[in-house]
Amino acid sequence: MCGIVAYIGTRDARPILIEGLKRLEYRGYDSAGLALIHDGELLVRRAVGRISALEERLEPALDRATIGMAHTRWATHGAPTERNAHPHRDASGKLALIHNGIIENYRVLKTYLENEGLQLESETDTEVLAKLVGHLYDGNLEDALRKALREVRGTFGIAVMHADEPGKIVAARRGSPLIVGVGQGEFVIASDAAAIVQHTPQVIYLEDNEVVTVSRDGFRTMTLDATPTTKKINEIELTLEQIELGGHQHFMSKEIFEQPEALRTAMRGRLDLEDGRIVLGGLTGVARELSHVKRIILTGCGTAWHAGLVGEYIIEELARIPCETEYASEFRYRNPILEQGTAVIAISQSGETADTLAAIREGRERGAMALGVVNAVGSTIARETDAGVYLHVGPEIGVASTKAFTGQVTLLTMLALMLGRRRHLSQSDTHNYIRALDSIPAAISRALLLSQQTREIAERYLDSPNWLYLGRGVQYPVALEGALKLKEISYIHAEGLPAAEMKHGPIALITDGMPVVMIAPRGAWYDKIVSNIEEVRARGGHVIAVATEGNDEIQRYAEHVLYVPDVPELLAPLLTVIPLQLLAYHAAVLRGCDVDKPRNLAKSVTVE
Ligand code: G6P
Image (cartoon, rainbow, N blue to C red; front, side, top):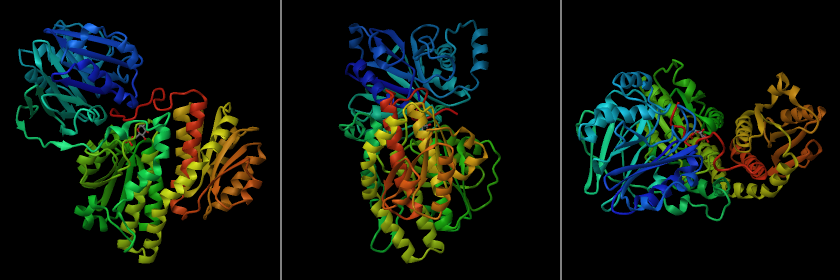
């Protein structure tokens, strides 16, 4: 989704801004733009498409500016055209503004501005804001921005600068992330730490409705009504190496293959193998309350929601606490019943997904305990929840989520074990699960050896326009996740279903040679799924089975078998999902798709 980078200092701003935009590319965008102030003049260049198209428009003369801002836009209001791209200017042409988020009352503000005699050139809500700030400008940019933002309903991460005050950038946020990198005599403001980390590890996180002004001499922060605030300088943990490709062709493949190590890190210090205990430091403050929780609601979007569905099975089974998983976008508007003793747990890689954030706010508002299972350290969800656990799987850059999914399932399993042990789970059962969890990274390494076989399968069915993914029980969400992976990066239509539901409609789709992925590891549901496999075969479908190593019998029913190591049934999703990630990855590569930046998608969806 949209990306913001702004720079003020003593170095050339242009390369810093372009490099920053490239680091944010993974979030998804459809146009880009840049503004610089040079010799008291504001210069703006914008282009549709990739950042390279913008670079072609940057003449060498632009190289001497030491203050500027840049943006990648993911269209919400108005098509991805040059006119709609950011930065937007005010009527004087001296003020430039970039914005992430949505100004909900932009129509009212637009009418007001038009009545004041101002003309708008684009269809965007952002231009309305730029014109409004310019209209209120009276020689002090900070004041003008604060006044304007007091009139705004909606969400924003904003940076603004003015040619008459060439020594400052003013930025603000509400519901959209914005981080200020604090260097030596320079500042980099960005919507994502990935654009800051090569310049400085020192950052400040803005709160909602907080405004920051940076100049070459320092920074100050205040609220929208001008009350000064104090900020702590934090160190970001992200290293440049972590966000580079490390020899892989795509971030997605890098992230698939680093899952063993990522999960080791996620579990480090949290599995006590000797005493058979789970230690989740982030929950210590709420441990007592959590022990008495009566109901758990897991909420998230996309892949995080799938991880929640897996977690629901595991929590109910191991902790015997009623648990349900809700789409965050539905939960927030549904007038949910939250009695005392309910915990709402937000699951989010980015920690910035607008719907998930709103769901957690709704939960808190109604008195529920709000917890987070989040990857991005210092993100808004992490900061707004009562307590939580970080995934610690490292930054995920590929839009299609992979290691965050396995990280989320791992953390939810640890949570289930911790809660289960406090209720009814025996010491020895807990201990066995902990040992099994500890063995998962090595088992994933074995499952990753399926890469070549999944590539061959992808090649064989590359022209099939429809795929089905079927699973039962705890493998049903894995079917959903496998189908999502395939469709989001290779644009092949795929549907995931609980296997028994197939006969209530989708079975009509099965024709000769249609690929049907059946997730069939050893366990309680195995015999049932074999019956479903027979139903598919009887109609000419080609079964690609994901099964447990040593199960030779399944070869009788399936065209292809992808074998994963044998682990306890509840932990098997951590393995069965691996060949499905690989299958989707190879299909997308073979079809020549832009794997890390699939069309129309965004990594972090900060609008509803
Ligand atoms: C977007 C991404 C998905 C992700 C979802 C939730 O749609 O493309 O990969 O699962 O958002 O994101 P979150 O950061 O909250 O996990």
